[in-house]
Length: 210
View (cartoon, rainbow, N blue to C red):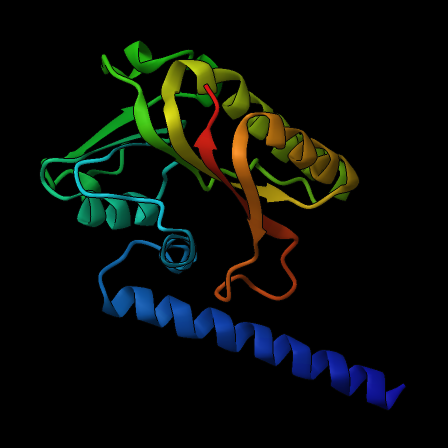
């Protein structure tokens, strides 16, 4: 009994060390959240973003992904963020960032975000308001992703890329397998900065078959 208690105490300490490291790193580098490092790792591995890309960030709040993309696409690129929460004014400095207070379920295309063109990349670190009931939270997470896939024909360019976060479940895994019909390549990744106890992971769809 003592061994198991000690094991879980060690595991908990390791989890918080990861949290503290990336939290402090984000603060030091002036990013709004530690999730920046998840997107950075995905980008370095899969080469998602290019200069002058137009990127849609669904559920951007608090905005570390938007910050990262803004720097990568450069001043001739565009990052459009949408979130149900009020616009985060800390992000309004860069001229290539445009934010909207809007529910993803109210978005059907670029016109709902004051845009006239499709995007090169669609990204989402969205998560539902969790209840603590595992099955409910998994279903809500999947519902968000299903909405993103539903609006892809009206938001993502042919050969564009998609990144999204999802809570793991059997339904989620089955759904991910269906994405091969939409993308030339579909990959999964749990970034190093993700807490070990987290059930979230990220899916990367490359070269959209619009």
